[in-house]
Length: 66
Image (cartoon, rainbow, N blue to C red; front, side):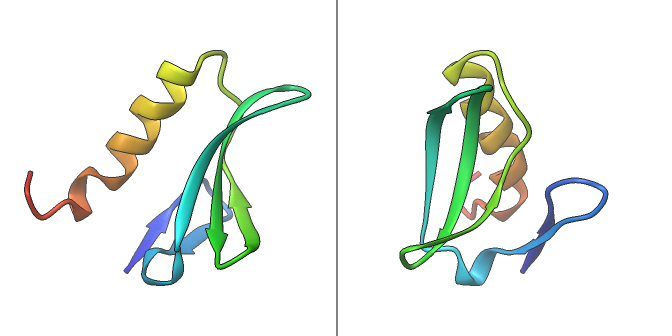
């Protein structure tokens, strides 16, 4: 299953093994990993709560428990 992160990036969710909300130099980003390799990162967020909400909304259509 693919999800569109932005206008240029499609992410294959079936290969993503973990996500991480990370504090970086320019703010907070969600990072996506296949095994030990980072394969994508999100836009920049001001707070962890904003990043968490964005990730939840991104994955909501794929959540089977709704």
